[in-house]
Image (tube, rainbow, N blue to C red):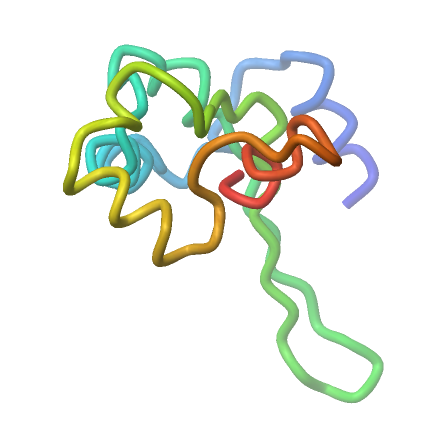
Amino acid sequence: NKNLIGSAMAGTIGGFNAHAANIVTAVFLATGQDPAQNVESSNCITLLEATEDGDLHISCTMPSLEVGTVGGGTTLPAQAACLKAMGCQGGDRENPGANAQRLA
């Protein structure tokens, strides 16, 4: 497991992507993001591990997900409504970047 994750993070060529591009692009279109950014944003590592209790823990780490909640397509009515429904529309004056982090 350590070698798998370490190799993936170091950029080793391999099958670490769970083909997240289709899902990322769909969410990008729905929330007013730039769909051209799906190349970088779809980089992910998916792991399935057994827990001590015998359950299955699934994680998907996306270290380069690029999103925003202000400007551009986020101001379109349908996309703004989607962001509002998720509680992350617009900027957060008290905590800049909080809404983008919530969206990510």
